[in-house]
Length: 399
Image (tube, rainbow, N blue to C red; front, top):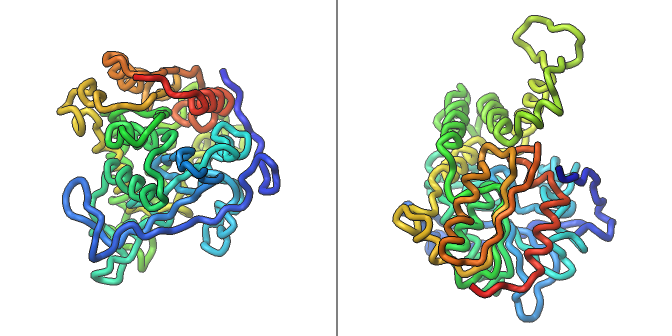
């Protein structure tokens, strides 16, 4: 099993990108709105993004990082605006992939210009359900339109256009970010040199759909949900916390949970025979749920999980045939799965690589032995970092 990197680089470390400041750009206006995949449009659209490193003169050293469900644009470094913006959790730790992005790291900011944008529908600076609806002046709530993975990729392409970037060295993402990476390879094959897909497949499994459905139901069943119009009152905190607890179980593995918690009781030697928190694993999940409520919006959770459900690369680009969809791919592709991941199991991840192989497309597939489950793409620093560094730095193979 690969080793992990538990240490944290302080902002003054030569390995850190240091202090960061998120940027916001308006990519669509009310007069010229952003068209949506399922119909309709939305405007204005403001997008929060962060960049690290320097864009070279040729503008061909760009790496686009696409984030997962609860992620944001703050990939690396320490947010200088955290306290001023109320994002206190950012003040306590660096960006969510700080182990991968920085000087000398696998995504080397001494060499590459790394970009990450928060996607439409989230609650981290990009227009979403908690944003004001220009027609009413009040938060959109459930009047916010349905958004898709395809919308997010077109949003990212529009951002790169605004930055003057026509072609990117690589796109990389894990989990829901990995699905965006797949969509990049299919939607914009002419703009992409390399595509890196971590712990993701061309569509979510039926079991994954089921977990998302239960999570949404717990939110909408919360007495405070109020049809999504809760911004002037108490939020559906209990429902959102329960949804996060359920989802978090899918991010782990049974061996990993056993290693970390076993059947150990929490703060006692004998059970209390009550319905309160008895076991250490219960305490852990309770903490995860409560911490999530402090930083995430329940309506955003509904919209993002629905986008995750709807994505089906084969249906979108190949009439249901994944091999046919993959004919569009022009980039080198690397797919990395993790042996104990049961949210995006290795067999499902391998489908994308297999379809590319059938067409003779340049593809690398690696299944990493790990006990960390789906979260392994964030935790297995050594092996993931080594794979990514080698793949991004190597010259392209001809297809």
